[in-house]
Length: 114
Length: 115
Image: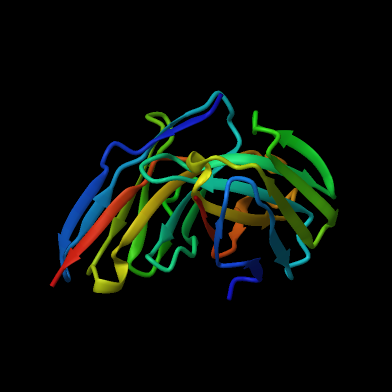
């Protein structure tokens, strides 16, 4: 257990469904991130939140909607996804100002869009 | 923009032998951090080792060590006495400065360990 918990671990959803991914960190970090990991592609940074404020959105389609109600929780709301959105979605957290410590990752949610 | 390149999609090593994974990066920053992460089949991304750019001494963590060549922008990972549990995907990553937020990853290298 790293201190970053992601739920659910697996998710299968239809293209017309609405679902949410949840991430919670117990490390007292002040920044949280969503990454997408597809087969044979580098990890793609999707969203960055510093102190609950979104500071980066890497041209992510609007069918992905992040929410960060506080520094410990991060959500990724999904709606009308496409099959190419099937991937492993990783959440991470870090402490801004302590760059040497890198990120702490959750175990990811394996998303399959059918 | 910073980029990280891992030129070896796959590597194999015999158990108890030594293997080196390559990583190069591109940046105009002088203050940054470099990391190696391991992702086993369990999917958990685990930090293996880290290096501060201003430190000339190469980082070492037990069987894992790095060869950091700042001028060449090279950051290779050496795994000594390889074990079956070392089999995983290894990612090299870069983070700019103390307040840099983005962790930029390479494409990864799959390491297979043969018994």
